[in-house]
Image (cartoon, rainbow, N blue to C red):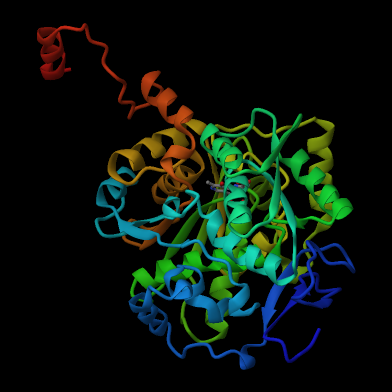
Length: 451
Ligand code: F0G
């Protein structure tokens, strides 16, 4: 590792802190096995002196890097040369202020914002991370890659892999993936291995397979992916005219996003580019609530990097003894051993964050409200709104605070949950189709009937 480099990899374990060059590919610290961070030698990078300078790049959209909603912020993730940077036009997302959705959670007008990451090329936020990780893969000359996935990672990885000529293999849990996502992986040409198990089983297998076969791993264990995901926060604050909101609300699955968001804000603060760090609320589904349980009930915290491993080990041993497998209709976050747990605890520390869990029923109602008034989203994304409703009701978040919910995946990713909710009248906002005879009078009667 050379100090002349703009970036390097560093172990997050305070008792290790080993450093490695970015020209190597690991998915955890070769010295101690802990997670790795990407760190920057900021004095070697020409970071714009004010954030608004990044916005000027919108005017240069025929430059492929300026067009990308990730690489537009390239000085803040300066780990590879421009010639290695892969882009398929990711990050063209919008922050929508939505008063109708605000009304549902009893917030004041003008306070609730929805960050639509479903507008990415593969339909989820994952593209922010893949563009960064594939750039690193190109830099290290990777030929084949793999991931375990609840669906969106595999769709995104498969799309980027064929775009830059890598072979890709995805590991999915049997029957655990929404059809929209599975169809993408197959259509984009990934080899798809369906394992008789859940996501956590797939995650374990893929790490061993990658080690044995020398494949490039694209799960969020990969620290380069998280660098790309930081830009979701940059785009949110850009749309707030470079002010930070009071709260960011994000679903929690493997905890890559929350980890990346905390790092994004810590770095902006360190660089003197923001004054205040927003608070973060991470929302689990009750059927997959490891983070909530560990933080709220077992008192687990970052503790300066010395996280109490015994508490985690005991918790996981108990899950194993009970043969626990997580279950939620929000299949994207159906995860009980989140690989980024420790980095997420760091984010909670940086952002004075909180965690909550919401039921599938609450998720489905919130999803229907977002569909009715916004651009729609998949179930995991709607956990944010369901969580926010709680946090407003119990006074944790004020009705007049500025809140941005990150809607991580597109509505069409999981049509089954949507159709079941509406057709089977599962909730307050169900909007079922009306059956009509093939007869004009009958049809008009039904259309104009008051119910
Ligand atoms: N929302 C969606 C739509 C997701 O696909 C995921 C994760 C999350 C939220 C959770 O994000 O892991 O950063 O906490 N999906 C992964 C996958 C696990 O394989 O597609 P996280």
